[in-house]
Length: 495
Image (tube, rainbow, N blue to C red):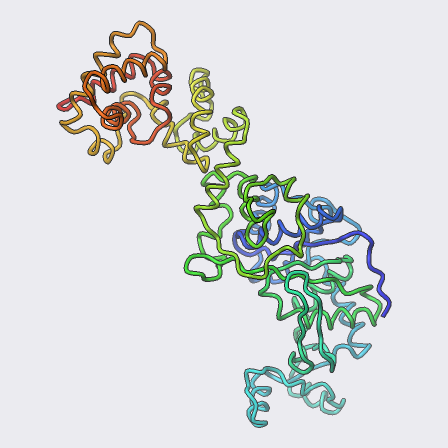
């Protein structure tokens, strides 16, 4: 059969707008996007929204939001257009009806009236496992038999006549795959009420949109023989010009080596945005779920991903989502941001957490700009900056050390260190980080003979409210003499 395949790659991402975008779905989008960009091709974004009971505009909007936040763009689809639209299946009903009619007229589809119970009973009567499914009984019904079923009020579904030969393909991820003839029952493509199913709409859209490569999750691999058979039927009726290449990407596993479900909170993409993952970091990590840029390298930019991405290098083995590794990789990308960019990205998290007002005054903006480089080195996700920075901006009347930190560091044993710190700092003529550091070391380490941890932890907790904070001396410089000394005095036992 002659194939007229486009010279350029045409990949697609075609989700159903149900629920919240999850990491497995976005990994699929990322790999298709990287594949298209690497090969100088096009990415088609198509919405499979024919299930009115499950699809929603809210989910559709969330999909757009997720892709736009991550910077995954498309060449054809919603908001962009293209010559093969419309790109929402709910707007393509006439197309499916026409194609189904062509296939039925050509004998590629046939009317089937059997119920699932009847097919199961026939399997049992033949000594076969009813789990084998439909038995292709209706393939050769006579017109009289069809009329008799219609007289009973039955409406036929339309089934694809599967070929009587083995079906195989060279999977771009998994290599040669073969399904033996007779192992795939004739699938339903159109319901009895005339509504097309995914089994029809997905391959028809791929054919009409001239998709050259279908890269999708391995859960869809069992449907591939049916799709290949339908592509060939579509070729015979002049709808398809070629059969695309297939690649089936590995499952993303969650805790306990279970497939990461879209209902699992760990899979919700927006949870990562809410926690302060940045697109560069999250895309880097998602790319590692089944692919690597090199055996000894985990950190790379989006441009480097596109430059290096080969679909044949994707692993067939399941990939496990490791949150700690994701955070570590994100932290690496946070540290590569310019300081101004970091401030711009972290500010909305500080506002949402009530650390800063929506319109911060100039003195607070200056404090943030000064402390930002020090915090940037310490956070894996942007939201971690909120607790680290709260002490700098809180109203003094509301400041109090965290209870756990105070219990640990501000007991009776802390009084000598706190009094020595206050005395040393009161004598400073200039309030600068280097002077503060020297004064505290002289008073606490040299003067009292304390180990650094024992010496500075009470001071840190008294001043910042936490055992973990930005660098102590720079923090105290930014707080100022009066605030810093006031907090140290209030932290003395008995106050």
